[in-house]
Image (cartoon, rainbow, N blue to C red):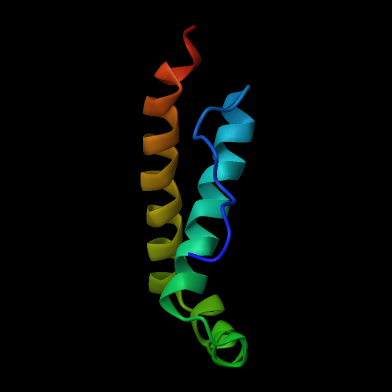
Length: 76
């Protein structure tokens, strides 16, 4: 890993946590396929796929569960 971009999973609000979950998901895709040109070529295919969109939503939901747990579900 070249850069440290995730110092903590702690967020101030659930919305910030959800946005972090999206960022985690997008970063995961970039780590899996680091070639931006290939990513751009593949995007139209999965952007029109109900299965692809459902899978992306599932990854975000799993990441949100992780962030939520790290934040004690924002109960304080």
